[in-house]
Image 1 (cartoon, one colour):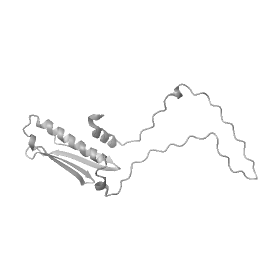
Image 2 (image 1 turned 45 degrees about the vertical axis):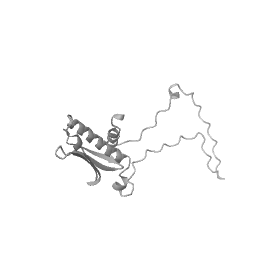
Image 3 (image 1 turned 45 degrees about the horizontal axis):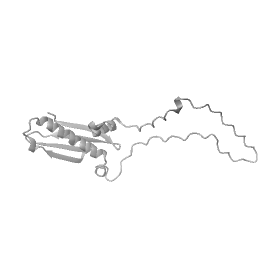
Image 4 (image 1 turned 135 degrees about the horizontal axis):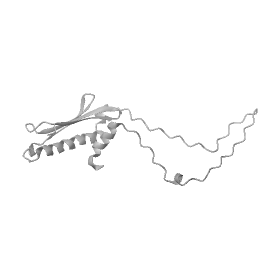
Length: 163
């Protein structure tokens, strides 16, 4: 019998705690709570009183708990609780990926000429060798934005067996 699940998840720069518990057959319900900084942001309570007589109750309740826990993770990631969690103020966005610099141009614009010194003659472009077979392959994939371990775990838990 599983008593509960607990996960700390980094979302929009803040730590959220998701807790799912089974109250047992004497009080047959599953409760999932979402916390931010010790404050409950959301809760969900599901009764399973109608299935108490099934043969494999422990397995069924564990599956219900997993689904309810994952659902809270999905709802958090979808932004459903942002207004409550951040009070209408957007949290600090995750750091942006560095912007790639443009490739240097072969010809540079001429500097303004002054009457005192003549502008140097532009240098001819260096001859380029023909592209090799390996450089003609498909361009490599753009690097993925870096994710924290919490974000990777959250993505895995939300996607579940779908991946």
